[in-house]
Amino acid sequence: MKPLSIQNIDMVYELPKGGSVHALSDVSFDLAGGRLLTLLGPSGCGKTTLLNIIAGFLAPSSGQVLLGGERINGPSKDRGMVFQQGALFEWQSVAKNISFGPRMNGQKPAEYKPEVDRLLDIVGLSGFGEKQIYELSGGMQQRVALARCLANDPEMMLMDEPLGALDALTREKMQGLILNLWVETRKSIVMVTHSVEEALLLGDVVFVMAPRPGRIEKVYELPFAKRALTEDTRELKQGDDFQEIKEEILSFIWEMEEQIMGTGV
Image 1 (tube, rainbow, N blue to C red):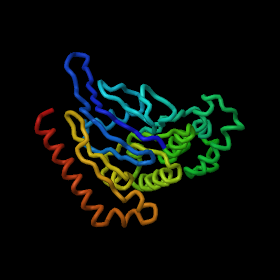
Image 2: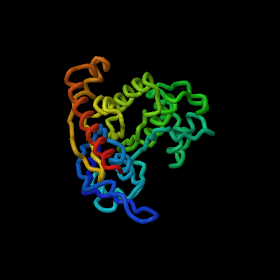
Image 3: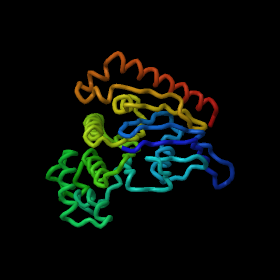
Image 4: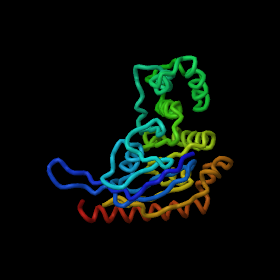
């Protein structure tokens, strides 16, 4: 399990008609391998920008990102991405979607088919390998996206609002799946979410970011992700300790939102 090191990241977007947007300012942190980090904050605080820099989709204006001591200079199979919409290949079956990475790496069917079957079982889709993507519900499609990410055996899974488009009940079930995958695979996960409740439940470490420019304002080391593996999650969310931190973060984000609205930006 490789540690992640973010060192003095700044990100400035130059606008086509002049001017610029300072999306991130001097962001630095170290994340041990095997942690589940959730990123929270108001719109415009740079959560997705930071995730895309870790993925290698964006190059920061200054600073560097290291995974296992090696500098990230672009996308790589050691970092798998799960998007809000599954970004699946509609013209291919579930099994073809999951096996896409291994097939592109030159693996033969005898090599990847057992792994595809194993991943289908892990995400609760045994027997759905030959189904077409359009035949699946939104929650099932996100399960396929998770399995496709895992098929490349990445060191780290990056998730950008992966549950944001799901209904409340499906979202709860998928939260449990993500926790189980985290424990079973022991992979590092960095997840962007707008839901404070979801961030507290899933993150064993939570960063609350502030905007203009984006920066890490608060850090929480929390026990709820591990407790959720053995406790009823609905009761856990109603606990005084969970509610206290939830209200603290909600108040903090609300204050930031009011400040942003007050500036007229």
